[in-house]
Image (cartoon, rainbow, N blue to C red; front, side):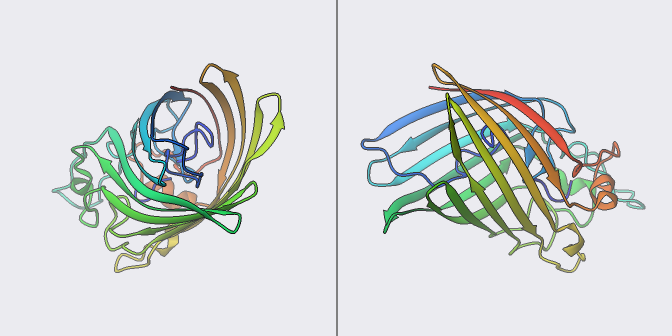
Amino acid sequence: MKFKSKLLLALLATSSAAFAQTAPAAPEVTYNVGVVSQYRYRGIAQTKGDPALQGGVDYANANGFYLGAWGSTIKWIKDAALETGNAAAKTPKGSVELDLYGGYKFEAAGVAYDVGYLRYQYVSNTYKDAASYNVNANTDEAYAAATYGPATLKYSYALSDLFGYGDTKGSTYWDLSATYDLGNGYSFVPHVGRQSITDGKYNNHGYSYNDFALTLNKDLGNGLTASVAAISTTGDVTKYKSNSSVAYDLSKNALVVGVKYAF
């Protein structure tokens, strides 16, 4: 896959760095582990519609600084389509995504802010082997978010080529989400996002798209959360299906269910 997208486990499948929150009263370390029926990121399939195991750890300091790591099983790298006519192309390797992030959270005039850096590390990946226009899938992004009331607006900027496709540095993603407490442990999270791909020398602009999600979460108590998310994108099916060696439409609509345990 050339461009990939994370909506789960509260949006349930987003990285732990996804939304701005206020700093804790004292330093703390928290852990989470979960499973989802499939892994979607920014609307795009990461596991070809199959389940994924996920988990992470977060450190938050009372002064607002935080660090974290989050991982998931993936399939999009090894399922990448090989470049037609390239005799040197071969099936790439890479079955684990590890996100490493850090940043600073603070409040001003009733608005919560979050600025930070996120590294998507695709452990031992050889994505560049699939096509001459591919590069290593590892990606670096800087992000900034602001939360007012239930709504969060987040902006991400690619400091490197984006998710393994060449000449895409400077690509951006806008994320607008809100969290509504419905009572009795339920919360509702509507989301809309815009992934803009830098055109570059490979004419990448056709891969830009919007994604949408409606997520219902249920706090089951004792650290357990269940979720169901309806996900849709405007991705060009001819492009996102051709990215998969198994002709799987990475951008098609999906229903994702999952459960997460935080401790």
